[in-house]
Image (cartoon, rainbow, N blue to C red):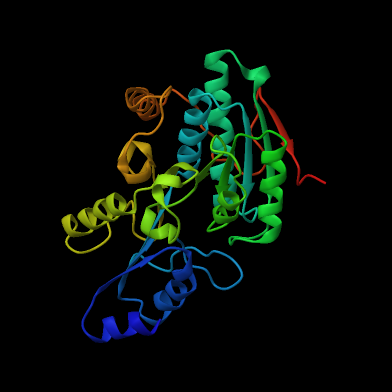
Length: 291
């Protein structure tokens, strides 16, 4: 809050706030400075208890079609040959659920195309944390010991515990979010168990938003002013990121990936973003957190 107020006092008329850590700050700013333009990236105003609508035409929010990111990941790992999968999610909040449900839909679509729906098995468990923890590592270790080949760590830094649980070279992890080796903060990229990350292209989304703002005379256009805009594959804002930007999948090639993106842009797959209930699937899912 202090940094934003100092920027406003210095003459800034546009404040960009990235991520959920700034959601409450943005809520306060839109009330305290109603004439200052705000751009919330991958976030919406949060009053401390719930999300609220942007207060005025001066506030624009960008969210992402994370279900498409999850779809890309689920489709890719099944096409790569993985059939015994696990999802360790953070908290059961809508954005995490969209990621995970998208992953399930992608895995389901790939299995159907390969004719292996009956051979595919996925476990799902909510860790109720966005950080690493012993209970996460214990769960991941148990799954790997039971034959799970790959775990999707979906929620903050909990993937660290998934990677620490890896005991064999063929056991892999994929990570949700904005991904790069500097963010990981530890480990040798050459020895990493991380296969790839379904990511949100914050940079491209920021360019899209600011271009619209500038072209509209330094004001948010009607489709953004006081609203939340979701961006995805069609806008180039959802993708798979590889370690060191090197394509490291063998069966699912880069050409296969580009063809998948094209089909998604054309609307070939009906990817649901509904979080009221899990998607209807042909594959088996063991909901370990269902009680």
